[in-house]
Length: 302
Image (cartoon, rainbow, N blue to C red):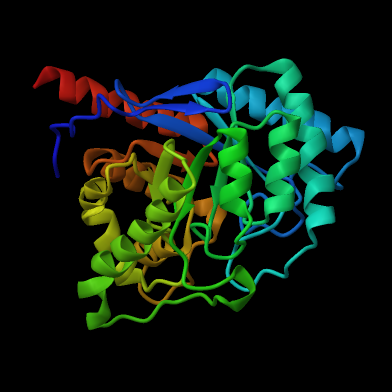
């Protein structure tokens, strides 16, 4: 593990009128899923679009910001393996009003977790700064133009397929040896598309947990710093994911559910930071902020 940070003096990203400064320390991205079926927090805030739901989600988001999150990532469609797709209209109904409400209460950066250009357009108009596209611009050809026009930041993630086509993958095998090259090649093409459209505020995400075996996920986590060769900040999203459950499962017992994966998540977040992550995407902002503080103190001591 590398306690010496990569030179990140260039990692100041202009995101639709706001600046995301990753040059001094990594950022925390807190997750607000306004969905009934996300794998950990689905349905946490109540029925989509209701005033009570918006208020509970707002309280959660503001709590994460107070705990140290610089970004709130808002999702209106579950991306867990096998999740049923929703229409763009439904996704907009779930997310745009909340983004507008959060913007009234906070200057924190807001990210919209979507691969649909119509949803991104509505979110950016409502006050979002970043588009977090799990497809790395590969699902919707109109997405780069929307992002370029709004001069927003983008997160480009690797996934081999849409969520409804993915399945939980616990298999092991030699394919883990080449997953880093496969993911890096995919993301390089995504970055090229973004830059061809004049987008410069780019973050890359290896897509941990998306269509990868347990061994492949850990290989990517161990070699996260290699993604910096793309010239972009790196996001790690490990929070409470199934491959963590596989590591902590005791012989003869079931895999611990997401609610029992907090300590594993803290460990994985710390490893991600030591291996070069510039952003942690998390459900538990305080725990992630504490892990960040310890890593930064250790780096400072060197």
